[in-house]
View 1 (cartoon, rainbow, N blue to C red):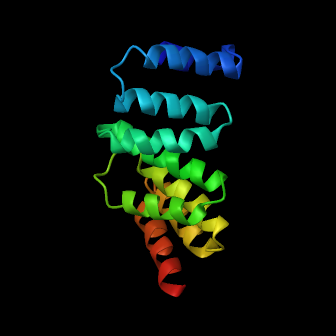
View 2 (cartoon, helix red, strand yellow; view 1 turned 90 degrees about the horizontal axis):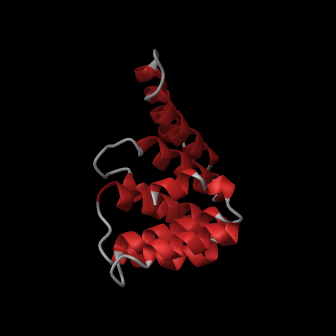
View 3 (cartoon, rainbow, N blue to C red; view 1 turned 135 degrees about the vertical axis):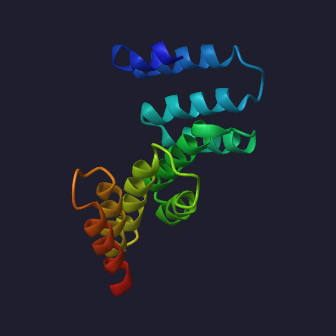
Length: 154
């Protein structure tokens, strides 16, 4: 599966999805990982409407670890793209309280997009600045504090 994903640009979208479907079919029926991979393939080829129920099924089937968080981020992004920014923001806000990992910045970035769609630009900037503050070589604490102040003023 990893080799297929690394070559996604070499495939026609329908051919890519077909290859993912073939590989996912090698897993047991209802496999959380298989559902996640199928959802991701549809999502990555421009079909968030097909991806959303597959992401939900993967999460309901017990997807765990980093894939669970990836599925949540990707589900939220797809929901936002389909006009459900409020549900996307709720999902991602819940992820702010999850165990910290390499996806913290992605959670905040996609949350910022959902917040903009909801007309909550000040919160979106705060989420973005908080995410950015963790990657700067300097001024981390200052930027994070300013991001918090944006929220206090709203």
